[in-house]
Image (cartoon, rainbow, N blue to C red; front, side, top):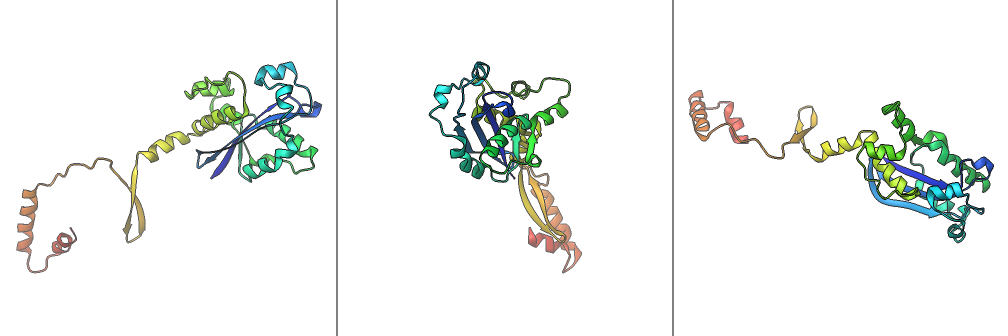
Length: 232
């Protein structure tokens, strides 16, 4: 299953009061594994950068003034995310900004039913404690030392790691990676069987085999054991 882990940076906290999107970062994961495919764009917000927001992400008005407008990157963004579920920490915040930008250019909004909110998942799994992204990185031993300031792509990369741990997918991947499976046909169809990495040592000696062959020789001309000996 394809999913997109997404994060944004903005000029503030409320798109209804004129705050704008300034950065989008997306990480593609497939069957809960990052594929290496990403989408990352800085966006000119067409307004000033409040000091409070600059302190969070370090993106200045001067830096963003040369970046494309949202309308110039929207097609590439929508093509990248496709119809995949969107994994977002505090999803209502990020999506409210994206939908505000989409509304400005008369495009359809992103619907809520495709959102996977990792903040809600974390609150259910770890109630009564802080579940900020940094806290979750510490809880799951994920290195976030590069996160000196917020950045959409870096935060999406960290969130992808957190998400895999949060839903228990990393343990499943480790189990599957350590197992070798074959398919065995029987009278009821095909059954997957797990093989040991190091086969067990045989418990039947060659003397046991010789004794068994001698016993079979006493059973007449067509003992059923001969069928199994032939297959072996």
